[in-house]
Length: 184
Image (cartoon, rainbow, N blue to C red; front, side, top):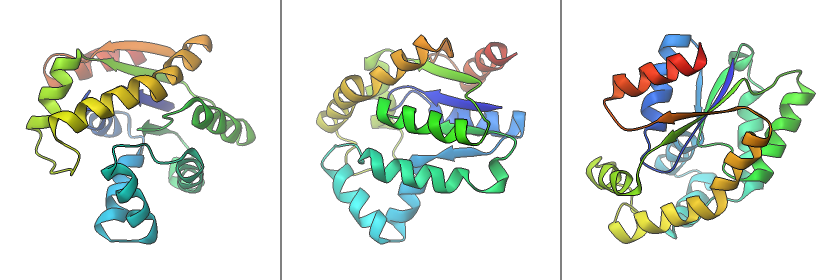
């Protein structure tokens, strides 16, 4: 099963993807985790990504697509994947669809977590990840970038009939129960 978990920063994608990974026994591919690992290890990609993120911008499509294609080519993803943080643009979505078509795969579900903006801001500022852009101004900028550049991905998958909207407010387990129901 190939699943995209989608939503704005702070919606709980990573938390729910981890629960899905264990429940459905499918690997979780988080572009954010890959970027954070590279930043922590100060790799050339990590340094490049850090400067982009510090400016509150999105990493260029080509960089992200190459990274994801390389990762998805590994055998551990043969039986499925939970994609978290990808695709973030329509160009990335089209590249993913092409990659899946070439490999006789498809997106089985596109789960979008819906959370009011005020709740998102509170979650991000209270989660204490220590990101350099976790300030009220930068969080609002990230949400603005999300709405402008990422929201069209939702429309792209709506046209394909793959979208399942999940209420992202409640306890972690309540939200996970909604996800399991949507996937059953």
